[in-house]
Amino acid sequence: MATNGTNGVQLPATQKAAQFNPKDQTVSINEIPIPSIKPHEILVKVKSASLCHSDLMLFESNEQGLTLGEGEPFTMGHEACGTILQLGSQVPTFQSGDSIGFLPIIDCCYDCPGCQIHNLNCETGSPKVQGMTVDGYFQEYVAIHWRNAAKIPSGMDLTTLAPMFCAGCTAFNSVTDTVAELEGVEPAETWVAVVGCGGLGHLGVQYLKAYECKVVGIDLSPDALEEAKAQGADFVFNPQVDGDYVAKIKAITGGRGCHAAINYTNSVPAYSSIPALLRTNGVLMVTGIPQRPLQFNAMEISMNRIRVRGSNNGITPRLVKCLEFSHKHGIKPHLTRFKLEQFQEMLDLMHSGKHKGRLGVVFD
Image (spheres, rainbow, N blue to C red):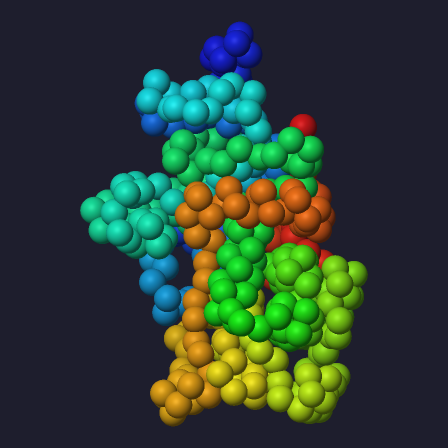
């Protein structure tokens, strides 16, 4: 039985969704109800939803605080964009038909000091991540909190834009935070190493080049390095092939090393290798999250040999800036498209690391 949408649009009663089962860590395509919205929510017709490397944390043991428990299956995915179909009674600003993208944190207050840094830091609520513990976006219709939403500038292609709402804003924030740390250094004279040139890294390269920085791409995947070069990286290195890559990087940076390195990988060894790439007082930007805690040399930090900073996908005001900057500079994700029924194939490809850019589902 169909339900009425906004402006007479007829919605189906159910939809298919790619769901993760915490009990046995499997994924299946299930038939689930179309969500009904609360007064503060927006019903979105999803155009595209993309897979993030952090989604793989659902299948891996970790020491970083992700606890799945023995709950019921939930829909995966925390990167998506689409068009507004319905608005709750308490939703301001937006209109039916608006194209929006959105962040995935719910059950937070959005207003406390913690929420001004990241909504997972909420001091009054019990924040949850859509797609990680509650229903996410690998389904055609989703309900999202209006305060997570940002309007998409006219002319941006929703078909390939889903990665912008985690990978894109994370890469943008990591680059803008790095540039801010390097205040006083002319961007055209700034060397930044991008460690991990895949889903986040290929966007990080684009943002750095928009700032006119010099970029060194580092990855173990030839496909990822090829994509980094295509996006403007000045040099690329594969540590498994270029055994003396650190010396080569020192040589091209005038013997001193990079001003900064942004690590988009979840590799502890990758983090351990970064200090050797940096010049004195260089910035190590922590963005990728390994399954195990990191260790840094306290002497190097205490003596300002390196500076360790962190960046993430941020909050909605930063997402708005990301979209505006991306639209102005023509920055686009590289998305390989799949059907929802191909979800396991997409997941296997992500596990293999043999892909360029991002992988995502595009809905009709």
